[in-house]
Amino acid sequence: MSALQGAVIAAGEGRRLRAGGLATPKPLVPVGGVPLLEAVLRNFRAAGIPSVVVVLNETHAGCADWARARFAGADLRVLVRTTASSLESFRLVLDAAGPGRVLVSTVDAWCPPGEFARFAERAAARPADATVLGLTRLVADEAPLRARVDGAGRVTALGGDEGDLVTAGLYLVPERVRALPPPPGLGRLRDFLGWLVASGEPVYGELMGAVVDVDRPEDVALAEALAATPGDGGLR
Image (cartoon, rainbow, N blue to C red):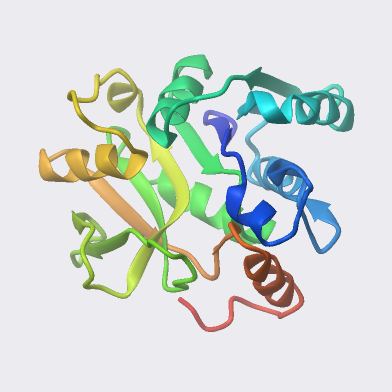
């Protein structure tokens, strides 16, 4: 698995968490006592991916010092940049990562290390030129991005209100797609992913168990409850 590079998008401001009364910077919001950023970096380690790039918002610059100290000696590059969109953050970490395929995770895509490692292994086994999305049946998001897949696991459509699978915030991106310039007018990462599917690019989905998009205080509670539950809650 070490042939893969890792990247973490942590440039969001965490407004919904703050609105819910959590003043802690989003990357350091704990789930079961473990900050989100630490949890995702542990996940990369569990998947055998030693080299990781992280982008943090300038308002959370202190998290960069925390990460460097907490993971001293690790192959960790921390960028501090306020980006205009999730797509800009995505492109930034892809450009900063080393050559080859890159496994990108949002900092708020909470899942157990074993679940993350299984996704990395299965995604890496897909064709080398394919983009692979983590998918889950756990819909705990105000605006989920729904996906439809065929019998071979290829994503046939993204978006809309139909389907019981949603994207989980994990994306394996091949070298060729890293070099593709997005067409003008795409403002969000989901728009770019939808464009890949619509343009005929090979995009596959790998079904995961529970992956919680931690955007609100109730999401923290849900992730902690799932962390204390053996297995994947029957969500496969």
